[in-house]
Figure 1 (cartoon, rainbow, N blue to C red):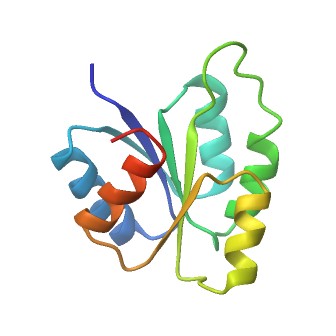
Figure 2: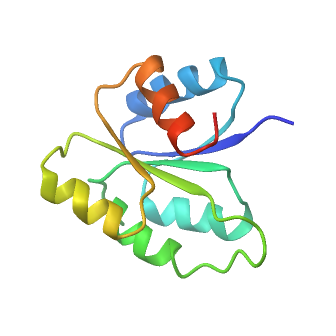
Length: 124
């Protein structure tokens, strides 16, 4: 059974690039254009990992993470969250990790970088 990833980004181009990389790694990929769409998806589904943008309209990555942390997955394992953003200050990284992100990847990213991060969180 393949692993699943929810790609959350307001950029269609980034979602397409991420989908291409993830599918080449045998992931089943779903997409959301903002945090609210992602939250709705996560209420009905449990992806193995979420690739999450920071800056989005409607609901930002940090707002999504706050609401996501309130979801009850019962005994099932919580999906891993990898922030994927251009925000690269140590303060942003620290804030993301403290808010519950498991890892952090900088845009632009390539397959090697993304694969390494997914291995670090145990889903690749």
